[in-house]
Amino acid sequence: MGRHYLDHASTSPLRPEAAAAMSRWLEEAGAGEWGDPGRVHLEGRRARPVLEEAREAVAGFLGTRPRQVVFTSGATEAVNAAVWGATRGHPGRPVLLAEVEHSCVREASVRLAPTVVLPVDGTGRVDIAALEEALARVEAEGGPPALVHCQAANHEVGTLQPLAEVVEASHRRGAWVHVDAAVAAGHLPVAFDDLGADLLSVSAHKLGGPPGVGALLVRRGLRIEPLLLGGDQERGRRGGLENGIGIVGFGAVAGALAEPGRQAAEAALAREQTARLLEAALAVDDVGILGHPLDRLPQLVCLAVGGVEAEPVLLGLDRAGVAAHSGSACSSEALAPSPVLEAMGVEAERSLRLSVGWSTTGEDVAAFAGAFPGVVGDLRALGRSG
Image (tube, rainbow, N blue to C red):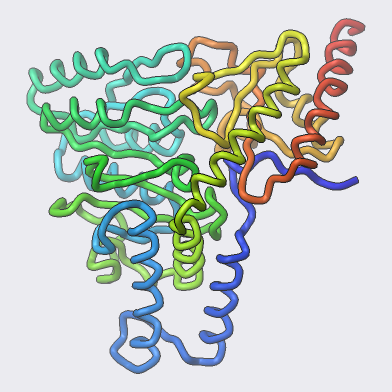
């Protein structure tokens, strides 16, 4: 039995472009041609342009200048660095965020500052009127907040957030804005400079790059205290020897996705594939869609499956060769009730998330369509007999 991977929102397989670029890095580094890119010797001088070419590719892909890109170990570190820098720059001031933000955003914020939780509607979209009220209240209590978080799109249900309105309202009150674009980058256009946000976090492995590398984008002219100290790498914004092989892989994927028409074509195919997944799922009784049915990511759908809990559905699909997920990637070990779905006011224990990516085939979609009705039907029958 073959395997069919429908969990790209957790991590996506390595793209061929990244694998080829990383192989070249390994070969040339192993031959002693490259060294520490921060050194003045020949090996260091050879390594530095390779990293800067990758930085240029990532910057171009995300619509900003190379100097605004700070390479990190992933989006989680980038988020923590954003929260650290903002709260150190505005000590004692609160952070505003919705409960639907990723766990790393929520937990980093709670650890470092008082937080104000923003409500969302039944699709998971931030309430702009509530944001305006919270900003005014916080400002009246002593000044603007340290930071306002707003994800580009939700990582569990795919709902797109009103980023432009959030940025405009926050800046009018003097607040910085951080955008978590980890699940959106590579699937929707992300133009950092045009967006006007102050900070933005991304991760390479979500879009077919290697794990262990990501970036924090910092608005031009903004200075924040670094999270990691110990060296002057990344222009003094992140200490530690750069992850050369990971950065090169990230740059290769960014360059590939920046090719004219590439990202749009992948998004169109993803929409077609998720539409077929939805069609198959909604043909089963008591199955519905969670999140916004239209204003959502092209590659992700989240289902509410009545009458059964998430874990046995996942296990049944896995036995049928289909990999899927319930809730966010960081809660998979516990399969705990999703705070995202609870904030939306829907039952949190019965969700199923399906996500496609660059390597998804028609056979993968067909495998789910063939397995899902039987898995759910068998589990419901078992529940009735028990």
